[in-house]
Length: 338
Ligand code: URA
Image (cartoon, rainbow, N blue to C red; front, side):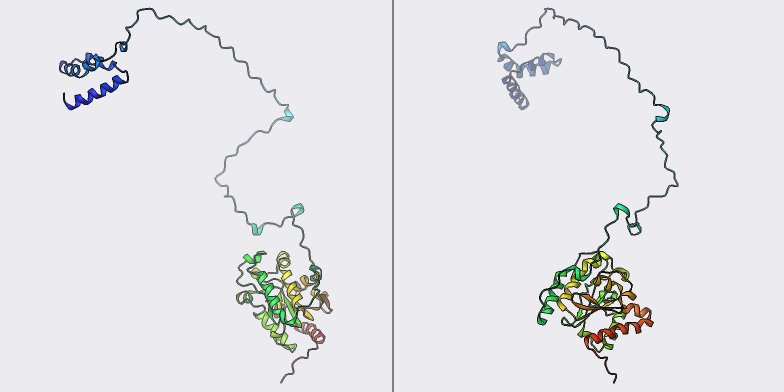
């Protein structure tokens, strides 16, 4: 017996152990006498070992009982679908008209939020309250010692940090412009907000308007280093526009703290924006100029903004009148020309 016959015998014995014997029958079906003889030599010893009860039972000749025929069920006739009564003439649902898109239809436009009309009616945001610096916070009960003012101002600056409290933080700001000058100054100037030069340098009033302010200060017999200069907002509004109320109101508490720390004798509000937020009133400069206002215990004078004076130099004389009243208040004498 060659190797293949040996492995086949092992496989047949494996099948027999499983009780499978019918496989032997196939050998009888072979028409090839050589193959049949080979098959017999391989399979017969295994077939001979098959148990007697493993024989397939002979086919029975008894008739197979017939399953009784199932009765044929009749499908019930379908019930008719109830018909919706027709709507009365005046109560007809509108016909749905599908208009095919026309080739000439313009593409949908992106919504331009910058051009969006301001919300009105019940959707309009509440008006920003205009609160004077005197009503914004209680007056300080203690004076800060002169030696501590610089540190106190620095602490306010630290609180501002890299501020993101209002939209001006995201409007192309380069520097937060905190202040310049003497923390112990008797005279404080308050402007509107930094321009391009101030944004670039981080120092208030260093551009053309700043040069004119320097000249005004010098004309009062003072040097710039002797006064304190700050703005209502500390970040440049884009295109030097007027600060929005929410921007000014967000930044005002810092200016208020600067005023409370420096405690100047006189504050000069430069222009309408500074006057509006310091005093909490919206009035013309003509109304506000020429008399004293109280801001956190200091006397406040309102005058023209230097940028306005650059545009309309004829008003310089009027501004000089305002500054002369301040000089009288502070006991200042104009410098003698030598
Ligand atoms: N205008 C202002 O109001 N403030 C500045 O610092 C510069 C220009």
